[in-house]
Image 1: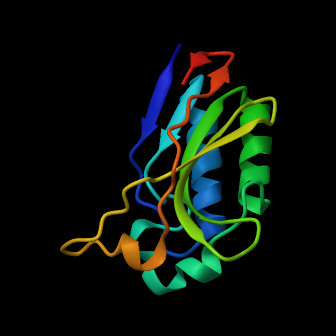
Image 2 (image 1 turned 90 degrees about the vertical axis):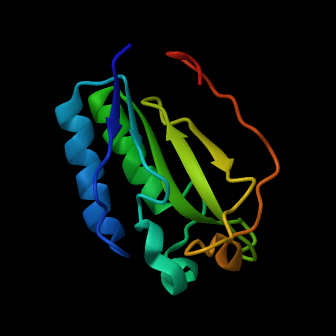
Length: 139
């Protein structure tokens, strides 16, 4: 299994540009699993824009990531702000999108809330650890 860890600088508050970066990185990696950083979809310091930028899972961003994953036969992990289905709660979420369109998510259980980190102001706490059974094995 070839794994690519994409340590890229996301464009703050620009999901479209960051989805383009995801597509380019996945396409050029030739990897089976491509992983992007925490909140890569919006940039980590989006702060007050998080409620506006958050999406449901599945949603527009994960649908585009699914197309990218399918086209390149890769599993893709991306951090993003997630809005729950009822639109009441936000989470700092990592999504795993498989080439077959399957989507798994992990909602961060312990949002950082110290020093420059203000995740607790924006995000609720996840409750579950997640393992995903994939064609690559259990992730």
